[in-house]
View 1 (spheres, rainbow, N blue to C red):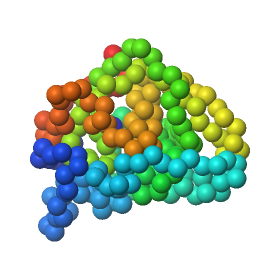
View 2 (view 1 turned 30 degrees about the vertical axis):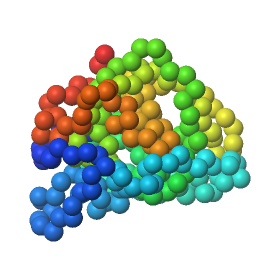
View 3 (view 1 turned 60 degrees about the vertical axis):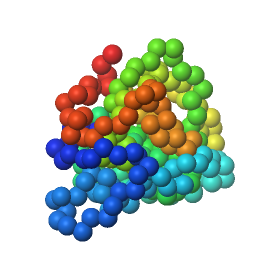
View 4 (view 1 turned 90 degrees about the horizontal axis):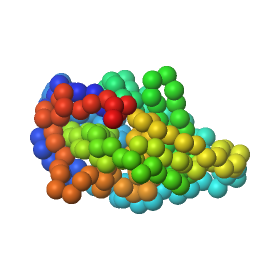
Length: 209
């Protein structure tokens, strides 16, 4: 979910604790910058359980406030890092146990409340992904090229939307967060995450097939 980054990172498991850094901010790792911005890191119980759905429209006010807080966190992150492929954030990544995600690609923003994938295409693609919750590494992830997602509006009405290409990958990544999964759970057997120093220049745009 990120462009190439000039700051190398050591190979590590996404669940390995990232040590505190007391030196110059210029030498902090990408993951340490995410910690400073309030992003919950891999290994936290907050990222290992299914997020609670909103009861809509009864909890519309709570949903609006959660969306506001996710947007504010995304604004902070966007000021610290550029995202060539867009950015997504799920509420559990800022410590909120609720089922909402916000995805930004280009000049568009997508908000999904209580989303669940109800259909996946048979054709898949394997591309590199990154995650704000363990930002020092990237990993190749198998995803369906197209997905159909059921989600709710604030007034409680159920909607069904179809996504393809890069947006489908974003949507699947964020819904995984809401279900207590990380992208490493989707990586092919025998593969491992790689540090940014190895990733640079090896990824391809998510629209490519």
